[in-house]
Image 1 (cartoon, helix red, strand yellow):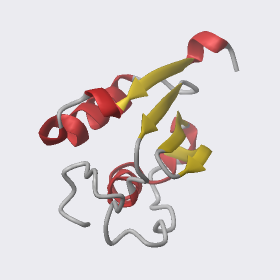
Image 2 (cartoon, helix red, strand yellow):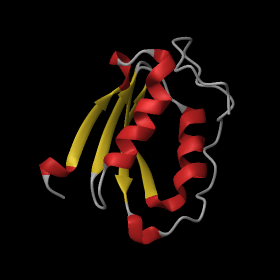
Image 3 (cartoon, one colour):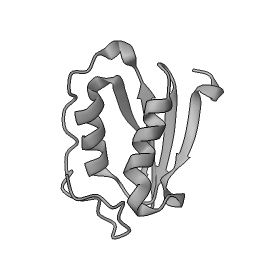
Length: 106
């Protein structure tokens, strides 16, 4: 994959009330084969489940870093994968960490 096919998205700079809408908008602007490199201060498990429910296997979710205060996830668009739902992300009851992404928990 080429470097220009990886687009950074730092959620820490987006107001909590707009985060999910901004993330979905960014995902929908990507083309097949492109990746959004998502950076956050906590693990957004409810968001990951929402992405899987909405896009199924058309968005691959791969952790690059998963440390307290430093979460980096690659969301890769793979349109040829179809829309069947991917398995749920374990532990998706809350975002945790206390910093909150504005999730309602599911």
